Length: 220
Image (cartoon, rainbow, N blue to C red; front, side, top):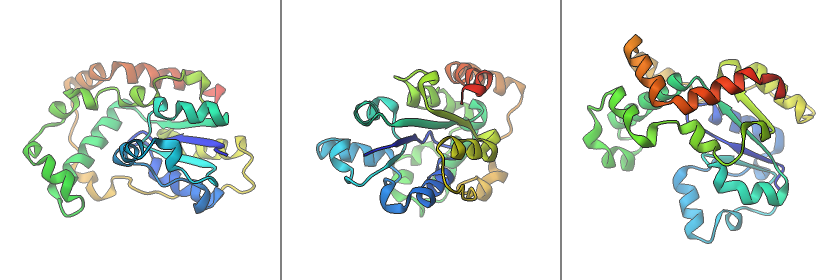
């Protein structure tokens, strides 16, 4: 029985949260952290539901809501996700992308497939449709008010504590800090006022979503 569906939007603290979920529920009751290619492989093999073990209580990964809608409704699961300032999220995702290109030993397949993008600037990256409004795209299909919980990376620890209390965890374990950009923080590009305006415009839907969640924080 799936109790919790955790939608991991890239660069919003999902890896740290995933480890915390494993601590609370037990490794065997939390899904592998689904990557996009894991989801597509599951679809090819008969669909996401068939790929999940029967003892699963928590589903977590880079999964769009539309892709887990059936499971959400079937199990009446609580759906949660984390957001981040949209511009900061894009900059972080860009830096992570460039880091993988500059260090192909970490992911040779990704580096090889994107070698031609080694000189891509932040704005060139951000202009691509696949990199615009990613938070809204992941959450599409369920209104934010219908999520059980939406946390913000900017208040990660406090929101994590609130979530643990809402879910009645017997104990709230310390929140690990993983994939926090420390190894390539110095490479984060500078964002001047003009670039900031462009990035906000390119992610207008995410800006509106983020502002809505901040305004309605009492609902979560």
